[in-house]
Image 1: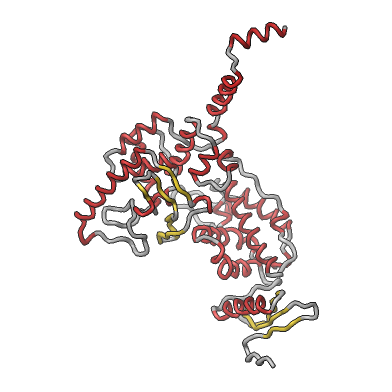
Image 2: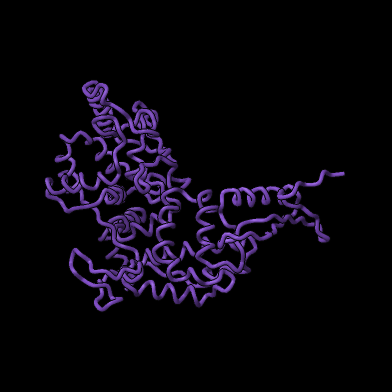
Length: 423
């Protein structure tokens, strides 16, 4: 005979349909306790769900229910579910969008009463309203003395189309988890059409501007970094997280395995954006030489710094690009450095991410195929590559047409004679 579970451990029972269910007391959002059920095909599955539910209760996290306020459900989802499924940077942005925009507008709606019309009207309002109103601001803005439209004058700052699309993605993701937990029958956010986003034209430097920028950066202690960003199209977080063990200077390759991002006040090392972002990149000879020179310079800096050379807590050993005291470089600081370099080189001001676009444009101009560019940049699909750089593929398309003429063996004289004979 199976040993009876102690009081408070919950109960597991086999149902008449062959499935199992378990019940235990959990916290409601208002602090009271209620009995909650979980279901599964096997006893082990139900026992696992029961353990997870009780662990949340021990942590003081309220359990989700179909009748709870949507704002309370979002709190539960962000605290109990999202951290295990989202990268820290994504979780941070989800929390910000939820706190600033979603919860104030939809937080009081009951989860099981949320409708497609609620989502649609919220997205319409969100797209049209100014950011001050959306955040509930009603104070005078000190920088320009404008007043939020809630009390008269509009600050004219609207959410971008990409932000609207991102908010919609948060709603879809949160409600999909509610379906998995059998709290609701359908994801009303999926029913609502995703807001469209017009692709932004990327800003790139031409060959002459790139040469001018690199010439200006030549004396810079991070010259190898600027050359690497332009030559390989690495994301700034990927480049700043590289270690010497990731680089094979003899083979002329580097391995992208991690990145670094600022999450609130901390610099966090993590895995790259997608599976395809973990990749091996071939290095041009100029990059190999620049990295070799940089390694020698770093050794000299380390000797000069002595005891002041103190890596940041949690950073990998042997970072290639560091401060003069061995600490990880803040990714945001690179944009400030690049702004100064662009000014001194007298080239258009661009962001660090625009160097990635510049790399792709230069490769396209050299006739490199889109598949190779996709692998180099670490895009998840070739569609992303083609969509992002469609507007800079004009020269490639012209070259393809000229190559077709060469393949058919027709020159202008032959073409004219064939047209005349046809007439």
